[in-house]
Length: 502
Image (tube, rainbow, N blue to C red; front, side, top):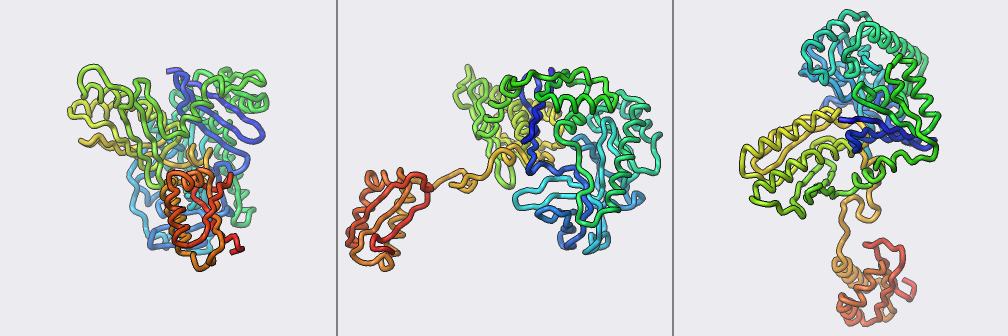
C-alpha cells in the first residue's frame, strides 16, 4: 500500500490529509479560530462535585466547564493493578480498576492540573483527565503514573518484549513510558533523546502551573502540521507533500531537531499549485458531506449521523448481479466493507456506528463479510470495537471520539430544518395557514382584507393546487384573502396580517 501525506497551511487554517493508494482516508483540519484543544493542559478549579454520577465540573477558563469523570483522576500507582496504555489512538487496553467515590478524591474549590481528552461539543464542555500524557516522536511520557507499555499496533511478540524491556530499563522517578508505533525497531539512544525532551517539557509545564492562578492555560500541543508529522510520519509513509514554504521549513526544522531520517521524504510543492484539488481531496470532502456514497458496482451507502449513533445502510442500487440473489448481495456487501471503513475514517465518525448490510441467508457468507470488515478496521488508528454480524445483517461498531468530526468542522445545522434534515410539505404548510387564519378571525377584524406573506412556492400552491383552502377562508371570514410570495422568506414561516393595520 502506498501511503502519503498532503499538508496545506495558511493564515486562516491548516489541513492535512492521509492518502492510501492515492485515495483520501483521513483528514485533519484546524482553524485559527476555534481550533481543537485536545492535548492542551490547564490549571483548573473544581466548580462542582457530583457523586451521583461520579463526575465533577472543572473551570478551565473556557466557555463551558470541563467534565471530569472519576476514572480519569490519577491516583496512587500502588492502587492501580492496570492502566490503559494511551498514546492517542494507538494504546493497548487493560481492565480499569474500580475507583473510590469521586468525593473522596477531589473537593469543590480544589485546583487541579488537567489535560483535555475530548473537544467540547455543542452542548457539552471538554472531557478532561488528571492523568497527563505527553507524546513525543517514539515515546509517550506518563508523568503521573509509573507504567510501561508498548503500542498495541506493534504486534510481533519478540519486538514487543524487546521494547518493553528497553523502556523499563529507562525507568526513573519522572513517570512511566509507552512506546509509540513509530518506535518499532528503534534503540536506546532514540528513546533517551525522546524521554529527555519530554521530561524537560513536563518540568516547564509544572513551572508554568505553579506560576499561574486557576483557571489558566499552561500548555498547548503542537499545531496541526507538526502534530500530524509527529504522529503519522512513519517508515511506511513514502512522501509528504507540503504547500507553503513557511510550513515546509518548519516541518523540516522539526524533523531535523528530532534527528529523523525521514526528512528527505518531505517535498515542497510549487507555489500556486492547488495540491488538494490535484489529488482529488476537494471532491472527496464534498462527497463526505453527502449522505449517499456510490459504490463502483452501482450499489450505494446511505450515511445518517444522529446525536446518539451513526446509521450506515448498504443498498443494491443499480447493481442487479448475474446469477443468484445471494451472490449479488455478498458481492455488494464485500465491496461496501472497504468504503464503509474509509468513510468512517474520512468523516471521523465516532461513538456507536450501526452498519446495516444487505441480508444474507448463508451463515458462511455473513462470516466472510464480517472478517473482511475486521481486517479493514485494523487500518483505523482510532480505537474501535466491532460486534459479530447479526442474522439480519447488522454490525455494531464503537469508535473512540476525541475531536469534532468532519460534519461538525465544515457544516452547521440547517437554519430551515434545524438539523432534522426534513421540511414540512407544501400541503402541511397550507393547512397550517388555514388553521392560523381561522383561529385569529376576531383579532384580524371583520371586513378588512387579510394578507398572507409566504415563500414563493407556497404562494404558487395557494393560488394553484391548494386554491380551495383560500376559497374556503374567503367564505368563512367573509373577506378578501390576498396571498403574496416573498423572496427570501423561510420555507416554513409565514406572516398573516390585516390590511387594516393589525
